[in-house]
Length: 374
Image (cartoon, rainbow, N blue to C red; front, side, top):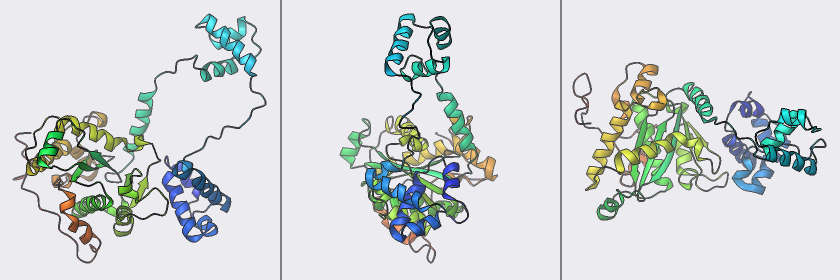
Protein backbone atom coordinates (compact mmCIF):
# COMPACT_ATOMS: atom_id res chain seq x y z
CA UNK A 1 0.00 0.00 0.00
CA UNK A 2 2.99 2.25 0.81
CA UNK A 3 2.45 5.94 0.09
CA UNK A 4 -1.09 5.57 -1.29
CA UNK A 5 -3.59 5.97 1.54
CA UNK A 6 -6.57 3.73 2.13
CA UNK A 7 -8.94 6.62 1.45
CA UNK A 8 -7.28 7.44 -1.90
CA UNK A 9 -7.61 3.83 -2.99
CA UNK A 10 -11.27 3.68 -1.88
CA UNK A 11 -12.03 6.90 -3.75
CA UNK A 12 -10.50 5.58 -6.99
CA UNK A 13 -11.75 1.98 -6.93
CA UNK A 14 -15.38 1.27 -7.91
CA UNK A 15 -15.29 -1.95 -5.84
CA UNK A 16 -13.61 -1.42 -2.43
CA UNK A 17 -14.78 -4.82 -1.18
CA UNK A 18 -11.49 -6.60 -1.97
CA UNK A 19 -9.43 -3.88 -0.26
CA UNK A 20 -11.49 -4.21 2.92
CA UNK A 21 -11.07 -8.00 2.82
CA UNK A 22 -7.28 -7.52 2.66
CA UNK A 23 -7.43 -4.90 5.42
CA UNK A 24 -9.26 -7.22 7.82
CA UNK A 25 -7.08 -10.19 6.90
CA UNK A 26 -3.96 -8.15 7.66
CA UNK A 27 -5.44 -6.86 10.94
CA UNK A 28 -6.27 -10.39 12.10
CA UNK A 29 -2.72 -11.55 11.42
CA UNK A 30 -0.69 -8.52 12.53
CA UNK A 31 -2.96 -6.38 14.71
CA UNK A 32 -4.86 -3.11 14.30
CA UNK A 33 -1.87 -0.82 14.62
CA UNK A 34 0.16 -2.65 11.98
CA UNK A 35 -2.84 -2.75 9.62
CA UNK A 36 -3.42 0.99 10.03
CA UNK A 37 0.24 1.63 9.20
CA UNK A 38 0.25 -0.76 6.22
CA UNK A 39 -2.94 0.66 4.68
CA UNK A 40 -2.21 4.31 5.63
CA UNK A 41 -5.44 4.77 7.58
CA UNK A 42 -6.42 5.29 11.22
CA UNK A 43 -6.89 2.52 13.77
CA UNK A 44 -10.52 3.60 14.09
CA UNK A 45 -11.01 2.77 10.41
CA UNK A 46 -9.56 -0.70 10.96
CA UNK A 47 -11.73 -1.23 14.05
CA UNK A 48 -14.84 -0.10 12.17
CA UNK A 49 -14.48 -2.65 9.36
CA UNK A 50 -13.46 -5.46 11.70
CA UNK A 51 -16.54 -4.70 13.82
CA UNK A 52 -18.83 -4.71 10.77
CA UNK A 53 -17.29 -7.94 9.52
CA UNK A 54 -17.84 -9.66 12.88
CA UNK A 55 -21.41 -8.39 13.04
CA UNK A 56 -22.60 -9.05 9.47
CA UNK A 57 -19.92 -11.17 7.80
CA UNK A 58 -18.92 -10.32 4.23
CA UNK A 59 -22.13 -8.31 3.72
CA UNK A 60 -20.86 -5.87 6.33
CA UNK A 61 -18.01 -4.86 4.01
CA UNK A 62 -20.27 -3.27 1.42
CA UNK A 63 -20.69 0.49 1.35
CA UNK A 64 -23.26 1.74 3.87
CA UNK A 65 -25.66 4.59 3.25
CA UNK A 66 -24.56 7.93 4.69
CA UNK A 67 -28.10 9.14 4.98
CA UNK A 68 -28.70 10.81 8.38
CA UNK A 69 -30.85 8.83 10.81
CA UNK A 70 -33.10 11.82 11.47
CA UNK A 71 -33.91 15.14 9.80
CA UNK A 72 -35.48 18.01 11.76
CA UNK A 73 -36.77 19.61 8.54
CA UNK A 74 -38.56 16.52 7.24
CA UNK A 75 -42.16 17.07 6.18
CA UNK A 76 -44.56 15.68 8.84
CA UNK A 77 -46.30 12.44 7.79
CA UNK A 78 -49.80 13.98 7.89
CA UNK A 79 -48.78 16.87 5.63
CA UNK A 80 -47.05 14.43 3.26
CA UNK A 81 -50.22 12.34 3.07
CA UNK A 82 -52.26 15.45 2.15
CA UNK A 83 -49.81 16.28 -0.65
CA UNK A 84 -50.00 12.73 -1.99
CA UNK A 85 -53.82 12.69 -1.86
CA UNK A 86 -53.86 15.94 -3.79
CA UNK A 87 -51.45 14.52 -6.35
CA UNK A 88 -53.51 11.33 -6.76
CA UNK A 89 -56.71 13.27 -7.30
CA UNK A 90 -55.13 15.53 -9.94
CA UNK A 91 -53.11 12.77 -11.65
CA UNK A 92 -50.40 14.46 -13.77
CA UNK A 93 -50.16 17.81 -12.04
CA UNK A 94 -46.50 18.55 -11.29
CA UNK A 95 -44.86 19.84 -8.12
CA UNK A 96 -44.45 23.45 -9.34
CA UNK A 97 -48.09 23.79 -10.32
CA UNK A 98 -49.25 22.12 -7.09
CA UNK A 99 -47.35 24.69 -5.01
CA UNK A 100 -48.43 27.62 -7.18
CA UNK A 101 -52.14 26.87 -7.49
CA UNK A 102 -53.07 24.90 -4.38
CA UNK A 103 -51.28 26.82 -1.65
CA UNK A 104 -49.01 23.99 -0.59
CA UNK A 105 -46.63 25.40 2.02
CA UNK A 106 -43.61 23.37 0.97
CA UNK A 107 -41.19 24.25 -1.84
CA UNK A 108 -41.63 22.65 -5.25
CA UNK A 109 -38.35 20.70 -4.83
CA UNK A 110 -39.61 19.25 -1.53
CA UNK A 111 -42.94 18.29 -3.11
CA UNK A 112 -41.09 16.69 -6.03
CA UNK A 113 -38.99 14.60 -3.62
CA UNK A 114 -42.18 13.46 -1.88
CA UNK A 115 -43.62 12.41 -5.23
CA UNK A 116 -40.48 10.53 -6.21
CA UNK A 117 -40.02 8.82 -2.84
CA UNK A 118 -43.59 7.51 -2.98
CA UNK A 119 -43.46 6.30 -6.61
CA UNK A 120 -45.68 9.03 -8.03
CA UNK A 121 -43.13 9.78 -10.77
CA UNK A 122 -42.00 7.24 -13.33
CA UNK A 123 -38.22 7.27 -13.63
CA UNK A 124 -36.78 7.60 -17.09
CA UNK A 125 -34.94 4.55 -18.32
CA UNK A 126 -31.24 5.22 -17.90
CA UNK A 127 -29.85 1.78 -18.60
CA UNK A 128 -28.16 2.94 -21.80
CA UNK A 129 -26.30 5.63 -19.84
CA UNK A 130 -24.95 3.05 -17.39
CA UNK A 131 -23.85 0.88 -20.30
CA UNK A 132 -22.01 3.81 -21.89
CA UNK A 133 -20.30 4.60 -18.59
CA UNK A 134 -19.17 0.97 -18.25
CA UNK A 135 -17.86 0.97 -21.81
CA UNK A 136 -15.73 4.02 -21.05
CA UNK A 137 -14.28 2.34 -17.95
CA UNK A 138 -13.55 -0.92 -19.78
CA UNK A 139 -12.02 0.95 -22.73
CA UNK A 140 -9.31 2.30 -20.38
CA UNK A 141 -8.21 -1.21 -19.41
CA UNK A 142 -5.33 -2.98 -21.13
CA UNK A 143 -5.70 -6.38 -22.77
CA UNK A 144 -5.40 -9.06 -20.06
CA UNK A 145 -5.31 -6.45 -17.30
CA UNK A 146 -8.55 -7.82 -15.83
CA UNK A 147 -9.88 -11.35 -16.26
CA UNK A 148 -13.19 -12.52 -14.82
CA UNK A 149 -13.41 -16.18 -13.80
CA UNK A 150 -16.56 -18.16 -13.02
CA UNK A 151 -18.00 -21.69 -13.10
CA UNK A 152 -21.01 -22.72 -15.20
CA UNK A 153 -23.12 -25.78 -14.42
CA UNK A 154 -23.90 -27.75 -17.59
CA UNK A 155 -26.22 -30.51 -16.42
CA UNK A 156 -29.25 -28.20 -16.29
CA UNK A 157 -29.04 -27.50 -20.07
CA UNK A 158 -31.84 -29.59 -21.66
CA UNK A 159 -29.98 -30.49 -24.86
CA UNK A 160 -26.75 -31.35 -23.02
CA UNK A 161 -28.30 -33.37 -20.19
CA UNK A 162 -28.93 -36.65 -22.12
CA UNK A 163 -25.30 -36.72 -23.30
CA UNK A 164 -24.11 -35.82 -19.79
CA UNK A 165 -25.97 -38.84 -18.37
CA UNK A 166 -25.33 -41.43 -21.08
CA UNK A 167 -21.70 -40.49 -21.89
CA UNK A 168 -20.74 -39.30 -18.39
CA UNK A 169 -19.60 -35.95 -19.73
CA UNK A 170 -18.25 -33.22 -17.42
CA UNK A 171 -20.77 -31.39 -15.27
CA UNK A 172 -19.02 -28.01 -15.03
CA UNK A 173 -17.38 -25.45 -17.28
CA UNK A 174 -14.60 -23.32 -15.76
CA UNK A 175 -14.57 -20.03 -17.66
CA UNK A 176 -12.22 -17.04 -17.92
CA UNK A 177 -12.92 -13.93 -19.95
CA UNK A 178 -10.70 -10.94 -20.60
CA UNK A 179 -12.73 -7.78 -19.92
CA UNK A 180 -11.02 -5.53 -22.49
CA UNK A 181 -11.02 -7.81 -25.53
CA UNK A 182 -13.81 -10.21 -24.58
CA UNK A 183 -11.53 -13.21 -25.28
CA UNK A 184 -12.99 -16.43 -23.88
CA UNK A 185 -11.09 -19.40 -22.39
CA UNK A 186 -12.66 -22.42 -20.75
CA UNK A 187 -12.11 -25.99 -19.60
CA UNK A 188 -14.28 -28.75 -18.15
CA UNK A 189 -14.52 -30.32 -14.72
CA UNK A 190 -16.37 -33.24 -13.23
CA UNK A 191 -16.07 -31.68 -9.78
CA UNK A 192 -16.57 -28.08 -8.70
CA UNK A 193 -13.72 -27.78 -6.25
CA UNK A 194 -10.67 -25.72 -5.40
CA UNK A 195 -8.27 -28.19 -7.05
CA UNK A 196 -9.96 -27.91 -10.44
CA UNK A 197 -10.19 -24.12 -10.07
CA UNK A 198 -6.45 -23.93 -9.31
CA UNK A 199 -5.64 -26.28 -12.20
CA UNK A 200 -7.64 -24.10 -14.58
CA UNK A 201 -5.85 -20.99 -13.33
CA UNK A 202 -2.44 -22.60 -13.82
CA UNK A 203 -3.41 -23.83 -17.29
CA UNK A 204 -4.48 -20.34 -18.38
CA UNK A 205 -1.58 -18.45 -16.78
CA UNK A 206 1.06 -20.76 -18.25
CA UNK A 207 -0.57 -20.35 -21.66
CA UNK A 208 -0.39 -16.55 -21.40
CA UNK A 209 3.22 -16.69 -20.19
CA UNK A 210 4.13 -18.72 -23.28
CA UNK A 211 3.12 -15.66 -25.36
CA UNK A 212 5.15 -13.22 -23.24
CA UNK A 213 2.16 -11.83 -21.30
CA UNK A 214 3.26 -10.43 -17.91
CA UNK A 215 0.88 -12.39 -15.67
CA UNK A 216 1.92 -10.43 -12.57
CA UNK A 217 -0.05 -7.46 -13.92
CA UNK A 218 -3.30 -9.44 -14.28
CA UNK A 219 -6.24 -8.92 -11.94
CA UNK A 220 -8.24 -12.16 -11.58
CA UNK A 221 -11.80 -11.39 -10.45
CA UNK A 222 -14.08 -14.08 -8.98
CA UNK A 223 -17.15 -14.39 -6.81
CA UNK A 224 -16.97 -15.85 -3.28
CA UNK A 225 -17.48 -19.47 -4.30
CA UNK A 226 -15.56 -21.96 -2.16
CA UNK A 227 -13.67 -23.16 -5.24
CA UNK A 228 -11.97 -19.75 -5.41
CA UNK A 229 -11.75 -18.54 -1.79
CA UNK A 230 -11.80 -21.69 0.36
CA UNK A 231 -14.59 -20.66 2.73
CA UNK A 232 -16.34 -17.35 3.23
CA UNK A 233 -14.25 -16.34 6.25
CA UNK A 234 -11.55 -13.77 5.68
CA UNK A 235 -8.10 -15.22 6.14
CA UNK A 236 -9.00 -18.69 4.88
CA UNK A 237 -6.58 -19.95 2.27
CA UNK A 238 -7.38 -21.69 -1.00
CA UNK A 239 -5.18 -23.27 -3.68
CA UNK A 240 -6.68 -20.87 -6.25
CA UNK A 241 -5.87 -17.72 -4.26
CA UNK A 242 -2.38 -18.95 -3.34
CA UNK A 243 -1.64 -19.80 -6.96
CA UNK A 244 -2.79 -16.40 -8.24
CA UNK A 245 -1.01 -14.26 -5.65
CA UNK A 246 1.99 -16.30 -4.47
CA UNK A 247 3.01 -18.27 -7.56
CA UNK A 248 2.08 -15.83 -10.33
CA UNK A 249 2.28 -12.61 -8.24
CA UNK A 250 -1.03 -11.48 -9.75
CA UNK A 251 -3.99 -9.96 -7.89
CA UNK A 252 -7.11 -11.85 -6.84
CA UNK A 253 -10.20 -9.62 -6.56
CA UNK A 254 -13.41 -10.80 -4.89
CA UNK A 255 -16.75 -9.25 -5.83
CA UNK A 256 -19.28 -8.36 -3.10
CA UNK A 257 -21.72 -11.12 -2.06
CA UNK A 258 -24.93 -11.41 -4.13
CA UNK A 259 -23.58 -9.04 -6.79
CA UNK A 260 -23.23 -11.12 -10.01
CA UNK A 261 -23.32 -7.99 -12.19
CA UNK A 262 -19.71 -7.34 -11.16
CA UNK A 263 -18.83 -10.40 -13.26
CA UNK A 264 -21.22 -9.50 -16.07
CA UNK A 265 -18.71 -10.16 -18.88
CA UNK A 266 -18.13 -13.79 -18.01
CA UNK A 267 -21.81 -14.29 -17.09
CA UNK A 268 -22.81 -12.99 -20.53
CA UNK A 269 -20.44 -15.44 -22.21
CA UNK A 270 -22.18 -18.27 -20.34
CA UNK A 271 -25.50 -17.28 -21.90
CA UNK A 272 -23.95 -17.05 -25.38
CA UNK A 273 -22.15 -20.39 -25.28
CA UNK A 274 -25.28 -22.13 -24.01
CA UNK A 275 -27.35 -20.73 -26.90
CA UNK A 276 -24.71 -21.24 -29.61
CA UNK A 277 -23.04 -24.51 -28.55
CA UNK A 278 -24.67 -26.62 -25.85
CA UNK A 279 -28.25 -26.07 -27.00
CA UNK A 280 -27.63 -26.90 -30.67
CA UNK A 281 -24.82 -29.48 -30.94
CA UNK A 282 -24.64 -33.23 -30.38
CA UNK A 283 -21.99 -34.69 -28.08
CA UNK A 284 -21.66 -38.44 -28.64
CA UNK A 285 -18.47 -38.71 -26.57
CA UNK A 286 -15.92 -36.68 -24.65
CA UNK A 287 -13.57 -36.21 -27.60
CA UNK A 288 -16.42 -34.76 -29.66
CA UNK A 289 -17.29 -32.37 -26.83
CA UNK A 290 -13.70 -31.11 -26.61
CA UNK A 291 -13.40 -30.83 -30.38
CA UNK A 292 -16.59 -28.81 -30.79
CA UNK A 293 -15.70 -26.67 -27.77
CA UNK A 294 -12.33 -25.82 -29.35
CA UNK A 295 -14.03 -24.98 -32.65
CA UNK A 296 -16.45 -22.68 -30.85
CA UNK A 297 -13.63 -20.96 -28.96
CA UNK A 298 -11.77 -20.26 -32.21
CA UNK A 299 -14.94 -18.87 -33.76
CA UNK A 300 -15.73 -16.75 -30.68
CA UNK A 301 -12.24 -15.30 -30.22
CA UNK A 302 -11.00 -14.94 -33.80
CA UNK A 303 -14.07 -14.42 -35.96
CA UNK A 304 -17.28 -13.57 -34.11
CA UNK A 305 -18.00 -9.79 -34.08
CA UNK A 306 -19.09 -8.45 -30.69
CA UNK A 307 -21.96 -5.93 -30.93
CA UNK A 308 -21.06 -4.51 -27.52
CA UNK A 309 -17.51 -3.80 -28.75
CA UNK A 310 -18.33 -2.01 -32.02
CA UNK A 311 -18.58 -5.24 -34.03
CA UNK A 312 -14.95 -6.15 -33.36
CA UNK A 313 -13.78 -9.67 -32.58
CA UNK A 314 -11.52 -10.24 -29.54
CA UNK A 315 -8.60 -10.88 -31.91
CA UNK A 316 -9.18 -7.52 -33.61
CA UNK A 317 -9.13 -5.70 -30.27
CA UNK A 318 -5.94 -7.50 -29.20
CA UNK A 319 -4.18 -6.59 -32.45
CA UNK A 320 -5.24 -2.95 -32.17
CA UNK A 321 -3.41 -2.75 -28.84
CA UNK A 322 -0.55 -5.23 -29.25
CA UNK A 323 0.06 -5.09 -33.01
CA UNK A 324 0.32 -8.24 -35.19
CA UNK A 325 -0.32 -11.14 -32.82
CA UNK A 326 -0.01 -14.91 -33.06
CA UNK A 327 -3.64 -16.12 -33.18
CA UNK A 328 -2.69 -19.05 -30.95
CA UNK A 329 -2.67 -16.55 -28.07
CA UNK A 330 -6.48 -16.73 -28.09
CA UNK A 331 -6.69 -20.50 -28.62
CA UNK A 332 -6.52 -22.69 -25.52
CA UNK A 333 -7.48 -26.34 -25.96
CA UNK A 334 -10.42 -27.15 -23.60
CA UNK A 335 -9.34 -30.02 -21.32
CA UNK A 336 -10.88 -32.02 -18.49
CA UNK A 337 -9.27 -30.53 -15.41
CA UNK A 338 -9.74 -33.62 -13.21
CA UNK A 339 -7.46 -35.56 -15.60
CA UNK A 340 -4.73 -32.89 -15.61
CA UNK A 341 -3.84 -32.37 -11.95
CA UNK A 342 -0.17 -32.39 -12.97
CA UNK A 343 -0.61 -28.92 -14.48
CA UNK A 344 -1.38 -27.53 -11.03
CA UNK A 345 1.40 -29.40 -9.21
CA UNK A 346 4.03 -28.48 -11.79
CA UNK A 347 3.00 -24.81 -11.64
CA UNK A 348 3.95 -24.73 -7.95
CA UNK A 349 7.55 -25.20 -9.02
CA UNK A 350 7.24 -23.52 -12.42
CA UNK A 351 9.96 -21.03 -11.55
CA UNK A 352 12.43 -23.93 -11.41
CA UNK A 353 11.03 -26.50 -13.83
CA UNK A 354 8.24 -24.93 -15.87
CA UNK A 355 5.47 -27.16 -17.13
CA UNK A 356 4.13 -28.41 -20.37
CA UNK A 357 1.07 -26.88 -22.02
CA UNK A 358 -0.39 -29.46 -24.44
CA UNK A 359 0.38 -28.73 -28.09
CA UNK A 360 -2.53 -27.79 -30.32
CA UNK A 361 -3.24 -29.14 -33.79
CA UNK A 362 -2.03 -27.01 -36.69
CA UNK A 363 -5.12 -24.86 -37.12
CA UNK A 364 -3.36 -22.06 -39.02
CA UNK A 365 -1.36 -23.54 -41.92
CA UNK A 366 0.80 -21.15 -43.90
CA UNK A 367 0.80 -17.44 -43.25
CA UNK A 368 -2.90 -16.92 -42.85
CA UNK A 369 -5.52 -18.76 -40.83
CA UNK A 370 -7.99 -20.89 -42.73
CA UNK A 371 -11.44 -21.09 -41.20
CA UNK A 372 -13.30 -23.36 -43.57
CA UNK A 373 -16.30 -25.07 -42.05
CA UNK A 374 -17.13 -22.51 -39.30
